[in-house]
Amino acid sequence: MKTIKVSAGVLIDNGKVLITRRASKENFAGGWEFPGGKLEPGETPQECLSRELKEELDIDVAVGEYCTDVIHKYEAICVNLIAYYCTMVQGEISLSVHDQYQWIKIEDLLDYDLLAADVPIAEKVMEDYQ
Image (tube, rainbow, N blue to C red; front, side):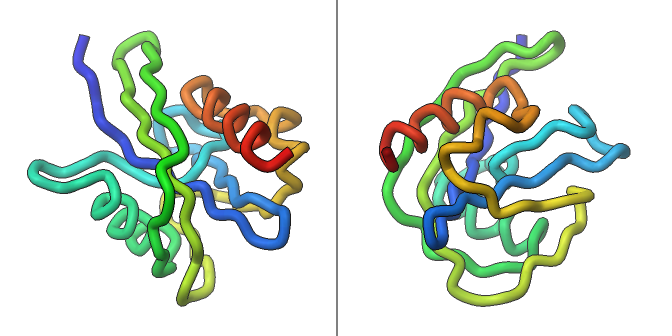
């Protein structure tokens, strides 16, 4: 089974965290996730995160501390999801591959239908911010 490396951003602002919902035309449509995307050859997870958040949300971020990483096997692929805490430094969120975004209270993360690979990240964020 092929493993895909993906970088995810945990953006926190005033006790709230950003999650995005995958649009109907995307794989895993309707699932909530921490935004990010696939690493390109020769790219670090941090570089990937900056690029992907600019492409997908039209925002510039400062990538900070490592949060956690998760290896999750879906039916057809295995995902290695590497999460970092980030701060939005410029831009207004504009969606391209997602149909919704929400800033939610950290303690409410598990109330959303998060994609399976994102759940352990949510649990780590909740642990780090309790």
